[in-house]
Length: 129
Image 1 (cartoon, rainbow, N blue to C red):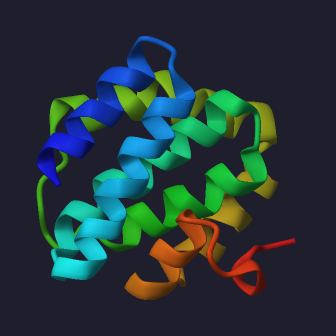
Image 2 (image 1 turned 180 degrees about the vertical axis):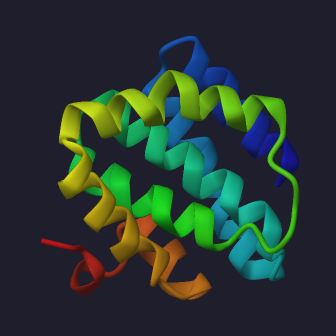
């Protein structure tokens, strides 16, 4: 899991959004399978950054909310803070704060399972409109 998250971050930083998406997705699948809840937040935030890079701010915002809701007391490190500064904060500005904040709140209401299903695009019923 840790390796997949690190790979996702590295790929995102060098501009390979597809490889970052795959790595964060695998990290989330492993977190779900092994029930490692705190590490899922990294994958959720990573996929939010990927969606921000791809311009899909409607998907990015709920993923940010889900990531924020599922830290389970773990500390956000400097790398996650940089992802927020480089990718998440500008996406929120582009999307408009009212719409962004509402979508973040929607994502924060996701259960652990629902957050991962949404992130992996497994449950279209969870997609906010």
